Image (cartoon, rainbow, N blue to C red; front, side, top):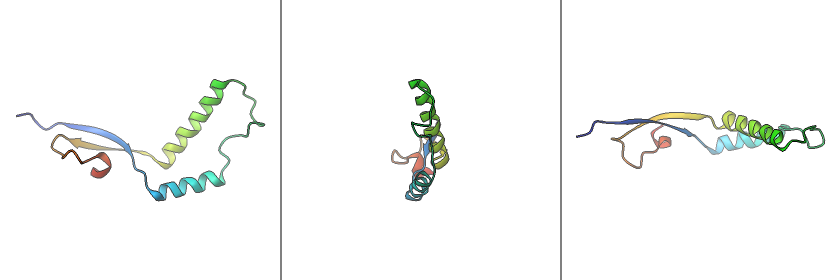
Length: 83
């Protein structure tokens, strides 16, 4: 008989309240400079800036959480349910 194994799973909790706060923030904040304000002509630099802003927003409004799922948990027990 095999012993119990456990795995640490990372997930992002997503709720309607988080969406509302995020949408309010987006609608009232200038996140990136307009195309007329930017001096970059390099596509990679522009993409890197977009990625950094997007990842920052994702982590701010939908932070990662971790939970341990074991081999003894039923199949329907997802990290979100277990949390």
